[in-house]
Amino acid sequence: MPAAASPEPSGGVKGRSAASGTPILVAVIVAVVSYGLMQTMLVPTVGVLQHSLNAGPAAVSWAVLSATLLSSAILTPLISRLGDGHGKRRVMLTVLVVYLVATLGGALSWDIGALIAFRAVQGVSLSLLPLAFGIVRESMPAVRVPGALGLTSAVVGGSAGIALLGGGLITDLAGWRWLFVAGAAMIVAALVLVWRNVPESPERTSIRLDWPGMLSLSAGLLMALLGLTQGASWGWGSPTVIVLLVGGPAVLALFLWIESRVPHPLFPPFLLVRRPIAAVHAIAFLIGANQFVFYVLVPRFAQTPPGSGGLADYGFGMSVTGAALVMLPGTVVMLPANALAARVEARWGRVAAPALGMLTAAAGAVALALAHARVWQFVVFVVVLSVGWGLVMSSLPRLVGGTAPPEHTAGANGVNTVARTVGGAVGSQVAAAVLATMTVPGTEAPAPSGYTASFLIAAGAAMFGAALVPLLRRRVRAPGEAAPAGSPTAPAAPATGTLGGP
Image (cartoon, rainbow, N blue to C red):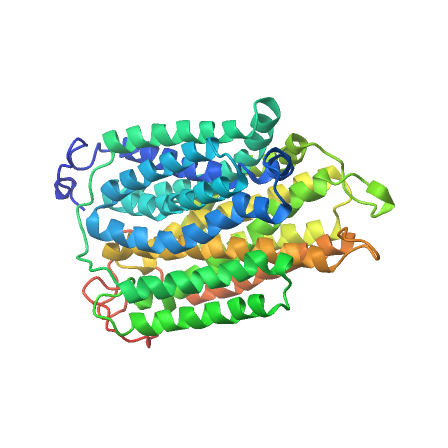
């Protein structure tokens, strides 16, 4: 769109910041990195937090992962919608301020309850991803948008992987509270860069808050994710967990019914259920499930002392930092995978990169399931997995942009980001459930077969994702290409209030 289309934001830049758009890209990447770091930086500190805050494993699990996943899944769709209506720059700055306060609070946490509360508030940070994707699409030169979207998405996985190593090093050298101090410094840098370099949205969608939709979406996600995150500790057959796992999807179905009938839905229903955008969300869910199985289990396997107590003959007995180093080479290859995705798409078409990425992730998962007795096998196969993750994640924002109308870009990316987050929650909890079920006889220690089964489940998720990619053929628009007239993704076609369609 023309450079003059963007109004001058108060205290910010005027229009598109420069012909290259590089200052905008740097600003949104720093914001996304601030999210990626805090997403996984606490994962290696589970044992340290239990001792420091005198907390049990279940409570620490909430502080490290569950509280943030739950709140982010609930808040991200709402914040993304607000970005479409009130300006992505303004909303991103507000999110960064709230995120900074919560991060500083995390550093000062006096008990596990306080840490859980601050981590829940940190869940607002997930919305930085869809907001960043929307800013890139509407503020950068059109020729740079595909590459910028891929790079922005790729740094999510890269920064999350680096955070595993950084979390171990900082905890070993200075203590776990300094993890939040480091995160706060990155958030401050993002605030300054976004304020200085990012223009306000040139296009905004008139919105009215859809309270029934927001409440039903929040309740459905809360119930489903609470059941998944607590199933292993409460018992998968307990009445409470069964009610949560059955009731969550039922309430989400109610949300879809509400959205098809209200005049101003939180999301136009086609962003949730119609092909091809629904297939893009399903792919995001499945790559998240595949990815988090290995984020959770690889460090755990590496830190297990070999034959500890004579219970099981596996594990490498590594330190927290050593276990994170196993993941580091894979982290390094995720950014080059972004450039590879662009080449693959240029040669074989716009859906070739996600297809190749899913197949690569499946191959890495199968290889690790078959051979994981040596450290080098983990290192090599995690690199293979990471190439697959990079290919898929760098293509997701382009797929969303090619299947959703411009005025709903942030909202559609919000749904997609939540889908990947929920997939991560499902993957990590399924893996935990498998390990809790497949144990060494007479003990609670996971059996080696539990890891093999979890890796194969992750492979199945990736294969299923690859099978969905053909649904996108001939339905994904190139950058700048208008949606076909009359299609549910055409800008001129408003939401019709029905859930039917192609």
